[in-house]
Image (tube, rainbow, N blue to C red; front, side):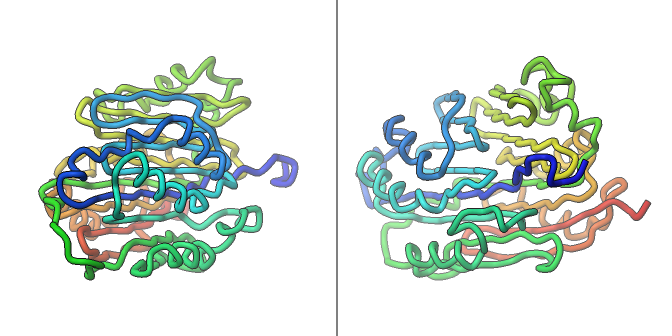
Length: 340
């Protein structure tokens, strides 16, 4: 079957994460979860996706979207969307909603990232080129900086964040660094066709069956799972723990352009075990691993560990880069299978 005869879908997500802050006593009561559901739905119309499922606990509101996921906690907003969505177009209205309803007047930190697309020609402005995305972000954040990790002519990963070492205005510093924060993301391509077949209506009755058959429920135990199996194929899940940690997986199973993303902010001293479980579950041909960790995070040593990990099972490391930002260390690695 030629690639043209299958309707192409871009599994690669655009990932936007924003940390908000404010001044003094008002910021204590500020909470992004005060933004009304109707306003969030209008925001997602701009992005070209919609809410299909929702769960919450005391720490986090977790939404499964028609194109990936959204997580909202007191001062962190995460939007992860695939296909031809336009998440950066919702930034200005989001900043207004954060002030109007949530009580946040300032963006403390921002991360926008994505892998290189398989078919950039199908994207919608401002997401056709990273340069376009950077221009839009620069217009809103004069102290932003853009990076590209990995080989520009092969597999690479783009990142935009706020300037590593400068503060815009003196203000009461929040005890940010007392708050451990870390994120592991694994982006996989060239996936095992047998594993991918689980994520179709032909092979699995529903999302619960696909979750159990694939072993997704065993990757991080004690997650409350909200999962969705698309017609005729495709899969999304969010998992949350009691203390507000999340895990999210999105699967584009078609063999011509298979793609799986895994992301979590669960704190642990080493991500090795989780990375191994994810690889054993999906058996990718190639994958990138990125780990962000701040100084308060128990995960901060994972960066060092990955720097020396030249092989993981049957995958060989082709690239590794390490960056230090204002509050975070980032490690980027790219692996692919040994030549068979």
